[in-house]
Length: 168
Image 1 (cartoon, rainbow, N blue to C red):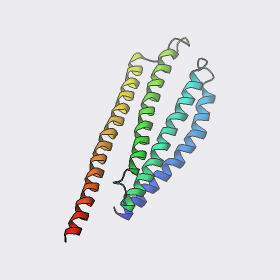
Image 2 (cartoon, rainbow, N blue to C red):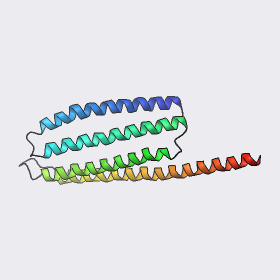
Image 3 (cartoon, rainbow, N blue to C red):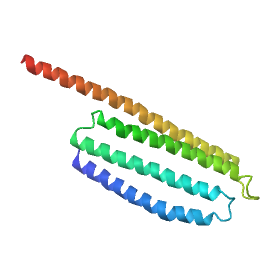
Image 4 (cartoon, rainbow, N blue to C red):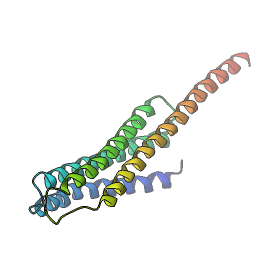
């Protein structure tokens, strides 16, 4: 893997992690304070969902960083990489559930405050986004399966090469 690509991706990941920390601290605090007019529990629920959602993205960024390090060293095709891919799959799935939680909060906020209704179509769109996020988790799972096949082929190749070296 090109050192330039590795360095560029690391810079992007570092900026994303710093930015996500800023969002967690500042934006979520603003969200919390601007929900004074909302029904009790809605503001708190949305703030908690936002913090947990950002945490999922941070976990994914750290795991991608670790996988990038393994790829740069040429060790990504090893059983150790499965741990990071599994964590990414779990974080994406958790993010999908959190998006669905936003839809649930929006649905119940409809009846909590007079005149502050969320359109049913918007709740449906949010549910659709949750479905898309779940689909991404499944896609990463398929990619994990391909990684498992590549690791198995790599192990088999090493064994065959070792046997060939003994013969020669």
